[in-house]
Amino acid sequence: MARIVVCGYMIRHPLAGNLFAYFHYVLGLHLLGHEVLYLEESGWSQSCYNPINRDYSDDPLVGLHAVQTFINTYVANATVCYVNRDTGTVYGADWQEVERMLKTADLLMNIGGVCWLPEFLLCKRRLLIDMDPFFTQTGTFAAEGRNDYHAYFSYGANIGQSNCGIPSDGITWLPTVPPVVPEIWRSPVLIPGQGSEEQAIAPFTTIANWSAYGKIIYEGESYGQKDEEFMRLLELPSYCTQPLELALSGKDKEIAEIAKSLQTAGWLVRDAREISAHLSTYITYITGSRGEFSVAKQAYVKTGSGWFSDRSVCYLAAGRPVILQDTGFSDWLQTGRGVLAFSSLKEAVDCIDRVNADYPAHCLAAREIAEQTFSYKVVLPRLLETANHARNELRRVEVR
Image (cartoon, rainbow, N blue to C red):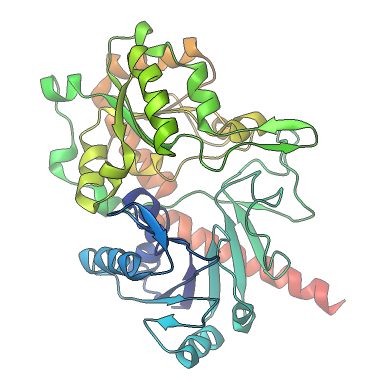
């Protein structure tokens, strides 16, 4: 088995939904028998978010504690290190130990590209996993060290296809999907029974950042966030009897204003930060939902990226159907049972009706999709094998 350095964005943003996006890699690699070092650097000043006082600072201790709690809860044998790039302070190890681990590692896996240290070059093999297609390729993220990887992967599974509008930036982006560890979400109590009244009235939910870092203009066109797409579906609750709930995060004033409009239109609105503040509340929220209903970022939809959500795979693993705005993922993922794709208000209503008409079957299909397509047992070995082949091709080119 290999020694793998995983870089991500857990310590600086220790909310459960964000943590799971990276932790599924850490835990999955551990369960496959690999030795894992989780390494994160500060990136910029005042980058560490504290969910208790909802403020930013340079202090990573709250985030370190949150990550260690995840590791202890799921018995993941992983070393955790954090580096303040401005002061050189290292938490979890000394600097010499970090350098030694980088030199002896078989692979560095940079997830999201929001970490970069020159010392990463000490690692013999490096790969970048783009979680935010279009925004990464146009330079919003992962700009540092962009040319210093042996292989590049993206959740934008359609990049390079004729129907995808994301520029490649001169890079061959290999398709991958977010992994999930189904064992986290699997429990007999999560399997809904026929005629369960409590489950029947449970809302379809999602947890979302309303406008994130905003829209960007690329070649004269605007590419936005989820807020743009949710507003297109503002009147959806008036077309269906099933409760629809959004757990939203973002700027307090903006969320307070938009919550009024959403509630007037019939949406239920929750504070995503309260739900994501703890591991238990996050899991309970997803498993207590009837399923997920969500849009995607406007940029993902507009470009036909093929992106599929790292949060949606959690719903699927819990046996909860996912109704998700089509980003082009229907090109590579079979939809219709367990996962349903929509592109309009009318299609969204139809998807909800179809799930409600045969709910137990959709729940079983959801879990099957999680196991067959998104399980760490499928995603991570394929990722590592593909990265190894990509590296060999790169080395042959360099020799020439």
